[in-house]
Every structure is written in C-alpha cells, then in structure tokens.
Length: 250
Length: 250
DNA sequence: AAGTGGTCTAGACCACCAT
DNA sequence: TGGTGGTCTAGACCACTTA
Image (cartoon, rainbow over all chains, first blue to last red):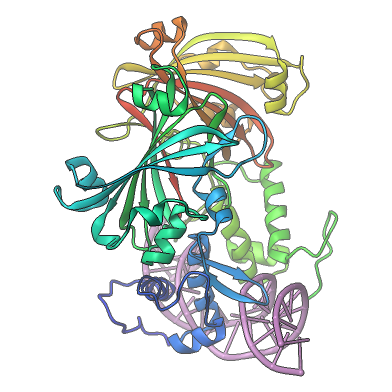
C-alpha cells in the first residue's frame, strides 16, 4: 500500500489521509452518514479504504478538529448535530456582560420571498436576481429584546420552506436547516462593525434612535464551504457583549 | 516503556504525550528553547524522553496546533515568534471593508505609571493597587487614524520598561514584550461592544462626537494562561471591520 | 464479554532543505 | 549527502460503554 492511491477524482500528490478525509467529507455531503448517527468503526473503515488504522485515524482527526465528527470513547464516532447546546456554545457569541450565558427566545417578525441583490448574491455564491427568502427575527435574552436578525436564504437550497416552519419552533434555526433540508452549518465568517440604531431597530430593541449597535454580518457555510445563509444581526450591547477567543484549542 | 512514566511532578493517569507536552511547555516557559530558535530534532527528543517517535510527534502536534511551535519540513521545528506577519494575521483582526489587509502605523500618545483599579486588577490577575503601566497608542491604517488603544501592563512583568522602548519602534508591541521581557503572547480573549465616541476619541479619530465606535476589550495571555496585558481598543468602523471566523482549521 | 475509541511502539520510506 | 520533518504500516494493549 505504498502507491499514491488510485481513487475517483483528480490527484496531485495528496497525502493518503487527506484523500481519505475528502472521501469522508463527500460521504457526509451526500448523506451516507447523517447528523447524529455513528459512522462505521475505525477498524471497519480502515479495511474498507484499504489503509492502516493509524492513517484512517489521522483522517478522522482532521474531521474531528473541524467539528464535523465527534468521537466518544467506547461508543463510536458520530456526525455532529446542531442541538441547542452545540449551537449556543459554538455559533452564538453574544453573552451578558455580567452573569452566565443564556438561550435566546426567537420571535419571527417577517417572512418574504424576494430576488437577490448584488451584495447578497455575491455573499451567497448565487446570481443576482435569483430567488431568495428574507426572514426577520427578534431575539430576546432573559425576556428583553437584544438582537434583530435579518436572514437571507437561497431558495434553491430551501425548496419548500414555509413561514410556519420558522414560527413557533422549539429548536434552533440551524437545527431546522439540518433536519428539514439536510444542510449542516459547520463554519461561519463574521464581520463586525459599530452602527447607529435606525428608527426601526430602535423601536424593536427599545433603545433611542442613534444608540450604538453592534452589527454582525455572518455568512454560514456547509461542508464544502458553500454559503447557505447570510445573516445581518444588530445587537444592543448595553448589557451584552460579543466574545472572540483567539488561539484556543477548541 | 509501558508504565505511566515517573517524572517530576504530580501524576493523575495522564497520557504520555500530554505529559511530554507539559514538559515541553515548561522548557519553553523557562527559556530553554527561545522564540525563533529550533528545538532539537524529533528523533533526538524521542531518545531524550525515552518514547517512540510517534508519541513524541503527537506531543509536538499539540504545541503546533496551539501555535506555540512551527514545523518546517527539512529544516526543523521552531519556537513561534511575533514577527510582523504572524501578529498581523493572527491577533490583529481589523481589516478594510474593501481592499487588502494593511499594517498599522503606531503612534505613542501617552505613557504613565499608575495603580491598578479593581477591574484592571481582576483582568490581569493581580491585586488592586499594584503598580501598572498605562499606555495609549493611536493606530493608523493607510495614513488615517482608525484605532485608539489603551493598554494596561502589570509593572511586575515589565520591570524596566520605558517610554522610549515604546516610542518609535520599527516592530510590533508583542515583539517588544517577547524580545525585551521574554513574554510570549499566545492567546487572547476579546469582548466587543458598540459605543459612542466621547470628545477625546472623536478628536483623535477625526469623527463626530457620538459617532459609533467598536470597543474591544482584550486580555492577552502567555504560555500558562497568565494575563500579561489588558487592552481596550476603540475602532472607527466607517471603512474598516472586525473579522471572526468560527470553525476554521487554523 | 464484545465492541468501541485511545495510546504507544518500532520501525520503513518519502519529501524537502542545506551544504 | 546527511539531516530534518511527513507519511504510513501492522500490530499490541488500554479505557470505556453497552448489553
């Protein structure tokens, strides 16, 4: 097993474990292994791919580091899911200045079908004019409104999404993407700026017009770095703040 | 070589490679290997610690993942330094909204000795009233002032730091900490909020009073998570933004 | 007890860099 | 050419979970 391996796609002197990682990402993207399920045991996968267990483990290491797979000793290796906790501690970075992290309450304010503008299209990797969904949510923490979210979703990826699915759900939004459309958000890119509250945002958040708000522009990406959501959040940081830890292990 | 290893400190069923990592961190903290230098070759270290090369590599893997060591194939493994590039691409997260990342020009505005207040002391892990240094810098990007930085440094860690060392340096501030005081910043914790410009900040940044500014409160940590700097930045995000990528490899 | 992931070994060989 | 890190093997044994 010393040759460069002769698999499906193009090959440019890629290490075997990277090639394995790619094949496993494909299996995930194509739904062979679904979120929450266990993938086959390491020894079994090593046999299936014809590699040693060490090499197979190295491929899995990469996917675990990318938070795509989760290992549990004695139980198995599982495809990561978007349960409340994972979402809260991983993608949701707004916390009270004093006191512990809280779950947001989400209220749907608007749901519309529209055409993508130029900036939206570029962010989502679609063509200007393509069909999109626009959603506005109001997020409250400890009972008080703190965040206004404006989402833009490419309709092509969310074919039969209805207002009802968004309203009154017990779970998180990324959970909805996953369960109803098989879309797993695994990475985000966020850009932050300070802005002044316009009349609309001020009314929703209960602040004065011209109050400072933290504006977050997030692009959410799935397995192969394809954009699936554009989200612009405006956050009242009077009693909350955004955290970013740089250089951490996890 | 199957026993749990019988090394210096206390032992609680820690994997061998974690124990190796700890010993290497100690060697780094005590200056046995200095920033920019190569550490001994893997085969040599494996012999020194009496472990197999695979286990030794796993320990190094952890330190590489934490950005403490840097591997270079064919050359060696080096202790990370704070050169301009590393700093710019790793800890400095303010970029133009349009166009490529830029190096900031730093101008020293103030340098004072003072006593730590309660909040400062807590952030830095020192006692209230301990001696600190307060430094104010103005950072410009492409010639225009964009950021006001207020630093608080515990005097105990920076014994003979003078205003001169801060003013007119060609290199970065973390580079100064490293070269003159042997302090390597390897992690930061940042908290962001939106605020309004006060008269002072407005004058420095050339914006109107009441303009929105992004406020960043950063605590910088060294090898063993000890705080070495508190920094409050106020950023004019009219033409710049702060980026945070969540779930990335590096 | 059977099955899973976690650790560790003792090599071989390759790719890259300096001289 | 000799030294470095990078990849890969083919196991053994341990720790943990589940039944």
